Length: 335
Image (cartoon, rainbow, N blue to C red; front, side, top):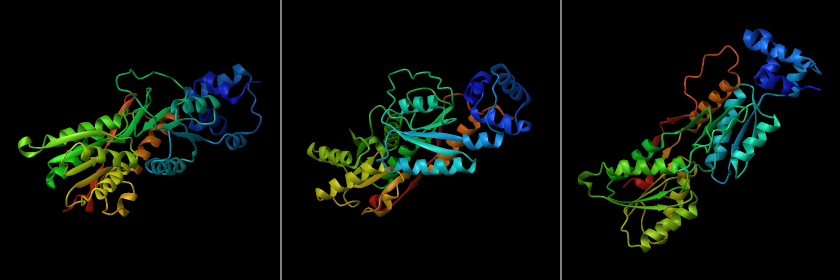
């Protein structure tokens, strides 16, 4: 017996559009409505309940897929995205998986969601990104995924890292340690690029730099500072690629009797609430979470409902959109 999924597939539309055609055909574009009705006729599909019951049994939902929740940044992103989806009467199904693509595939296959907002795990820049059609729209946020998607929304990582680095230089730093993030992420590469761009602004090109890799955890920030000190690098500033590593860096500096900010300036990236409460409070590049989440969910839901009377998307497929963050200066870089 044919199902509503079969109708949607035959007509080349979303489940929501089939539901709307049965519920309120006047809001569906004529060409699309005719395709759906033709598919219903061809398949001899008979709804088992009226349109209102269909809507109730199959609520509009999107998936949010992430690799982990240990970083407080991710739960905050989920909260902001969920709030935006709720405004448009969509529920949210959250999936946490170390292999986000597999979770996306399973969600799409299950038919339980009409689109997916994704934070991928890693994308290695030396590999070509896969071109995969999951049958439903996918929009990424924060990180460029390993496969092509409708669009990726993230903070402008290069500009943000440059702003932080220039702030540290303006505050007197000349020997800067940059603790980079996980290898294989575009955000890691972009923040490193921004760091180098910021260093180029140093008067007389008299600065020294050391770059050590972390993994976005506090422990990796601590270890990077330890390694720099043991190597004899006379650092006077630390720029960590996220706030958690910056917190670990502060702890290591204090352990080695460096005063922050009097001996060493420290700054992070993300704008996590924890930065307000560590001692000293943390200077950071604040990511506009709500703006990123709103843009992601809006784009996703517009793609889900694109077969209605809506203008064509203004962005080319697989675009990367950078949104400006803002520098928050606190005690860790104020002398």
